[in-house]
Image (cartoon, rainbow, N blue to C red; front, side, top):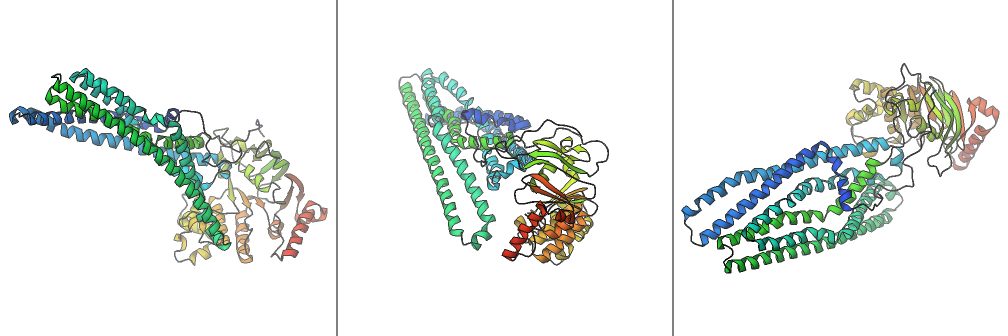
Length: 614
């Protein structure tokens, strides 16, 4: 068996929601720049959009200038022959103007939407990489917000900021040069106006960042609380707690409204500032231009051209400042996405290939110690036991004894702190995670069914399985009979979270998945807990079929399940207290008997339907 340096646990700090991304002292520009790697290969499209945007603005400047010049000459009495050349030039600009406008918008949005698709794929990959440890400390609604709304938010940066920002730093320069050619003083008036316009977002930058963080956090909390409410409606109605929950949603809604109001007030101030500066700038150009015309220093026909060019110089800057009002919110979304993408995985592959040769389904825990965090006591302490090929071992003990933790360590959801877990004589860390989990199937206590057909839910065990193989697995799992009584049979939609199925039906679907996967090692975590007698009998028959010929670890709750195991491992306080058959452990009159006695006492007091262990 190979040895490994103990892998330190990552991702198990004190619980924070995904919305609690750590605030950094990084500037807004730095935080937004962190989004650039997400563009990847689509940077070229953004470059094309930038070039098209610059050409579009230059063509717009030219067409606006020519149009103003034609109007001025016509007003001064020029003949049609004198204006024909200018009109033809104006007409020739229409087609390239339209083409560049379309290219600018199209390439920017195509790049943005492709980058968003890639980012979502990275976020989903991060979910898989970080599961389940990281996910247990985050709320599903929060994570859904990161995967959907936060990713959507950064579209503003990719599609409406990068190219316009580049245009705003290029076109006004060309316009200023043109005005300077008309008269140097016009350029001198315009430059300070453009600089003032560009600086407006920086005036309230600190408030913008605070508002952006608060708005994204409020949205994510509202999303998480709404998701919790939808999923828990039955409990809320059952306990009459809907008014209390509604009060919480109203509180979160009020917080969100307050954040939006603060964001709106700041945006209103910025709108007022930019509009005022732009109007004053235009007034300055008009006054100065009029004086120059009166003084004979500027051709009358060029006066309207100068005014139009000044306005056109401000448009790209105004467009960027308008987008910049939302960039603090985009930066907050960027922080949340990067926090997720950069989070260290609880475990990572240490090898690229599985051990050579056939893997014997022999499981061994050798002096295993594990703690979820360094500041917590170990959940498992020096645990040693084994499961031979084809053997069923029941793992029993009080709640919190470390049973489910052992199953998680076998699946390598976490790495041991000390000792080793091996399969076929190989440390589980000597397998790539995908190869290891191909050898093991988990049937959890709480089975998750997707809101799709029962056929597809079973096929989750093996995506390429035929309909006949799906049906065969369902028959073996005692699920075929109830499935065929449903109106749509195997095409029946399970409902969100499998809400349309009973607990026993969900468990049999889970066992059918396991049978379809046909892995040599089976882990059954409390598979018959909380079931009525009829459902338990059906699931027990399905479990017997699933266990046949497989190395099986059963985290057992019911005495009927425990007694069918080949051996029983009693866990107490994270340690293995006893190992043996039911008869052997009863004869020892030790921890196992105490466990049964405590459950028997609960059975007598509560009138329970059977003896159960936690």
